[in-house]
Length: 265
Image (cartoon, rainbow, N blue to C red; front, side, top):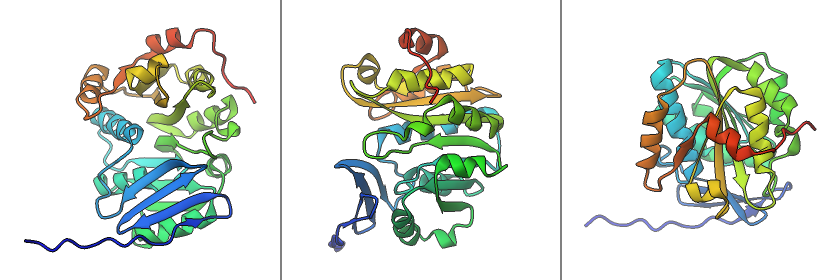
C-alpha cells in the first residue's frame, strides 16, 4: 500500500492590497473579501477547478478546431493564481501568453510557486491590464478579462473604451473571453451589452439557472472575430460537462438584454 504523504498547510498571508493567499501542499488558493477567486493544484495544472474557467477552456479548444493555429497567443487581464494560464501552458506548449496582475505581492508568490522563470512562454507581469494592453502593439488570438477587486471588476475594464482596445488587439482569428459576475446587484446585462456593442457575434456560456437569474454565478461572454467554431457542437460539449452549461447565441443574448445599455464611462 502506497504511503499517503501528509500535506502541511503553510501560513496564510494577506498582501497589502488585501489579497488572501494560502497554500497547502501543491495547491494555491487566492481570495479577496472572503470570496475565493482562484485555485490551482500546481502538480496537476491541466485540472481546472472553477466551472467558468472550464467553459473558457472549452471555448478556446473549439475555436482552435476552426482556426488550426499551432502557436496561439493569449493575453490575460487579471491573473490571480494563474489557474487558466498555467492550464493552457500545460495543454498548449507552443502557446505564448502574457498575464497581468495588479497585486505585486501576489505576482511574486505565484511566480515563485509555479516556477515561471522556467516557463519562458508564460510571462506574468505587474500592472493594470488596460495600461499594459494599450502600451503594447502586440496582438493576440485570445484576450481574457478576469479581473476583480473584491466582488466587482474595476469599472474601467468594463467600458466601451476598454472593449474597443481589446478588439484592436485581436488577430484576424480571435476571441475576447469575459468573466462577468451575475447577481442581483451586478451590472451584468450592461457588461454583456458593451461586448455586443463592439462584437457583432457575441455568445454567453452559463448554467441556465444563472441565465434566468434564479441563482448567482458567472457568465462567460465571448466576442468573436474571424472564423467561428461549430456552435452546435460547442453547445453539445458544454452540456456533457460534469456540471452542464449552455451556449446562448447572439440572437438569444440580444433578447435577454432587453433595454440594457453599454457602459460608456
